[in-house]
Image (cartoon, rainbow, N blue to C red; front, side, top):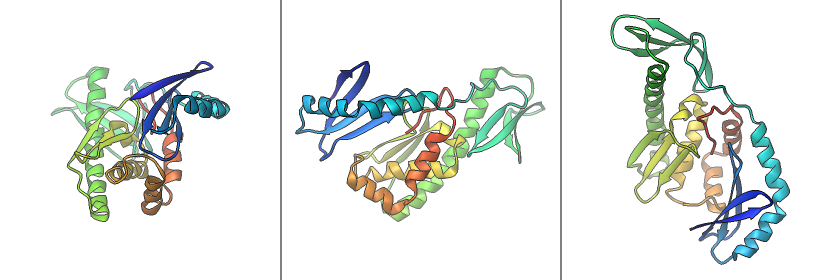
Length: 238
């Protein structure tokens, strides 16, 4: 059950869990604050802890507000789009046959038998993102299944409102944010590994951090890279 504290205009979501230490997080893009606290701890004690961290919370929220954001995509000729962290220029073509998306050295080419709406172009692009993300993510899942000796039952690709990925440890399912296709491949691997390790440790406590350190020693740098990339109006960080 999540409880809420109001501290000087800042809302803090508090969730009590079977953990040993308090964990404070400030989530992009809006600066949402969440505290995970041990079940034995009282709400008043959590309040005192949160008050002691108010300056830090405000500093993190200020950074998030100032973070660069991409302009919404309008799907116009020579507009910039991203795939695996690389910038491509959009080219629109009218050509016979079915509508399709092709990736060249520096361009993303969308061909269709007639001029189509912005929404249709967005759908075509999302289908391309979904296909390439599923292919690369499936390969990464297979690699980490072998190394971790664990099985992922299902892999879902979808738009997610608050995070880059999620999982259901009991069902062995993983969900990935569609916009990961825009980020560098190592960012995708970081999220895949992160979610699979939750099959072993459900929280982000010391045991989980130790596993991340063991399997991806540079994961903090990758996380920083993921969170430092420009956010679109439909992107969120993890």
